[in-house]
Structure formats: structure tokens, C-alpha cells
Length: 111
Image (cartoon, rainbow, N blue to C red):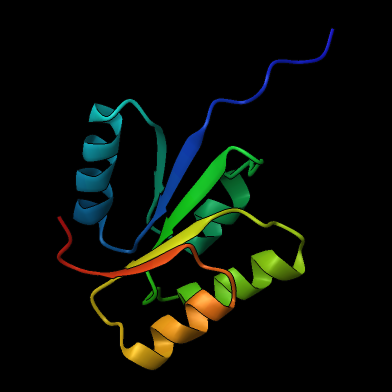
């Protein structure tokens, strides 16, 4: 008998704790399993990424920006859907993220 599949999980990575809290509440109300992080280091240490995972990622992170994290994950063979959510985005940044495989690029505030 094979082990059970992990539950679909939305990881939220944003350096603003209030944004993480708000998105976690919103997504849990929609019946998603959610894990929120405010630092790249904590995310990388704690995350068990699998095929039923997606990442909502802020671009402007203090340790490693979101685009750099996206690149690192891709180089490690971690090909999960990434949705960028940022208050500091511009068109060249969004094009770069999408060309690198991001599913979407949204600007804050978002409905």
C-alpha cells in the first residue's frame, strides 16, 4: 500500500506578518491547507514541497528577493506553481517572473 498523498498546501511567504495572517485566514476559509512564513530561511527550513503545493510569494523580501527564490527553487528542480503578490512590482519584474514560470503576478492590494 502506498503512503497517502499529502494534502494540497498553499505556502505564503511575505515579510509582513499581517499580510501572512490575512491571506492565511482568507485561504483557510476557502478550505485550503495553509502554511505562512515571514522569512525565506524559515520557509526553506520548514517547507516540504510536493506536487500538490503552490507558493504565494512576495517579491520584496529582506534575505533573498522573491525572484531570486523562484530561480533557486527552479535550479533545485522544485517546479511548483508560484503566484507573486507584491506592492513593489513593475512591468519588467512581472515579465521576468512569468517568463521564469510564475503562474501569476498580482499587485497589492488584491481582492
